[in-house]
Image (tube, rainbow, N blue to C red; front, side, top):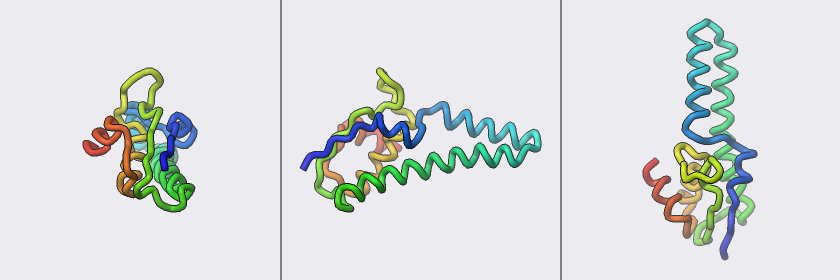
Length: 119
């Protein structure tokens, strides 16, 4: 059984990339520095919710495939977080691929496997 996933649709669930989360965490730091703890907590909550959404998406994928991806072939398209680039730094899709590998899916694109193994 082969399953094809277009993770560009995943962008509706989560954000990724090396800059956005770093920028939000810098904003948290600035808010804390100026004594705006409630604002800092809000922005830190955005990062926490993003992490939750990545896990939620992975679990939803597995549950919709009869609660297992073991032995299933899965092709991932839209792995890079930015259109028309190969930039995958901190892409949310890498976390989904890692979760699928932990669930013992049969195949992922080599670029995804290499990136997830280095993470």
